[in-house]
Length: 194
Image 1 (cartoon, rainbow, N blue to C red):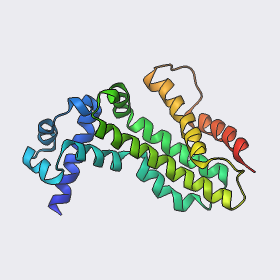
Image 2: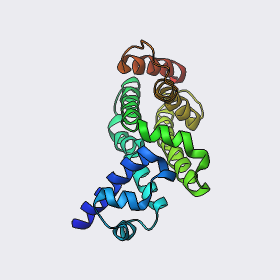
Image 3: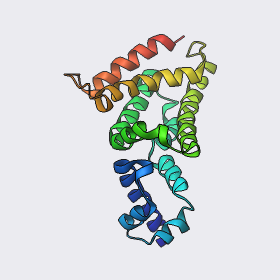
C-alpha cells in the first residue's frame, strides 16, 4: 500500500514539474525532491524519466477518461454522447493547459522515443473514438466515413478552439464553453448522421 502512495506522489510531482519545465527541463532529481523521496526511490518505481513521463501521459491525459466513458455513451443519443465526450475533452485540455503548452513549444526537441510516446497516446485516443463511430456505423446510425478521420476531425475542432484561446492567446468575447461545444457538436452531427 505504501508503494502505491509513493508512486502516486512521484507521478503528481512529475506532472507538476513537466507542466512547469517541460520534459527536457524537469529533472528526476527535482521530481524526487518534490515528491519527498530519494531519486533512487523514483527509479525503483520508474526505471527512467521516459517511463515516468509515459505513465503520467497514460494516467493524466484524456485517454483514460475517454475509455471510461465508452460503456456509458453507447446507450446515449448520438448528439448527447458527443456532447459528453467533447465536454470531458475540453475539461481535460483546460486542466492540463500548462503541460499542453510546454509540450507543444518543445516537442520538436524531444528525443524520438519520447515523441513516439506522445504520438502513440494521441493515436490511441483517435482509435478509441473511431471505435465508437464504427459501432454506430454498424448499427446504421452513421453514414459511411473513415472513422479515424472522423475522430481527428471531431477532437480537432475542440483542440483548435482551445489552441486559439490558450496557446495563441486569441481570446475574445466568446460564448461559454458549453455553447461552443453544443455548436460544434451540432455541426459534426449534421455531417455524420446517415
